[in-house]
Length: 239
Image 1 (cartoon, rainbow, N blue to C red):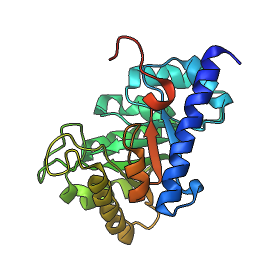
Image 2: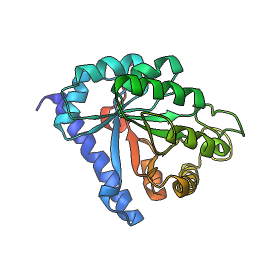
Image 3: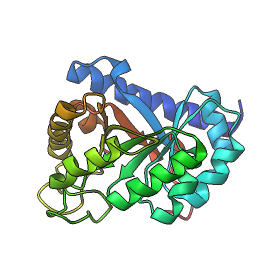
Image 4: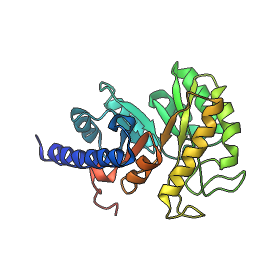
């Protein structure tokens, strides 16, 4: 193996151990949690190495980086997740390659993604990004719909051509009542998920937790964790 592939393999093994240990502690099966590797800022070559190492889910947060990377790796059997704040004018592009958009947070974006998916002849899985730091009717500092807007937005996604409502996503907030309380934040997201599934039983994905707090997410019941730095490392110049 190349040095880079060995490094990625070692990092993946450590993350796998963390997820397995967190599942054991929570009394969950390891298969209940899907690892998504966030490959933002890293080249398509790293995505290829990850695929060789068995990774099947990768995530990006900027269309200008994701679109060419997805095209360069089109021959690989990968599920592409878009996890960043998304402008409506980028929705058509994202709908052409993403399998899952995890950052749906407003009605205009639903309309744009639906149009893009229909145009591309694709079905796009969607998660609502919930902002636990947002007041009623507002968006969060890092994107996301306020909790009291979940039901209305969910109905819009569920009724949109080309889109499938699959669940909820959150980013641990830096402000508000859940700042520094990742476990409590993720448990609150699980409560919203339970409520959502009453009307939308198939919307059972819960994406929460990153490199620093994946254990809290697994303990709370997350089905997907998004890990970047712990697998790929800190890129020089990015802090």
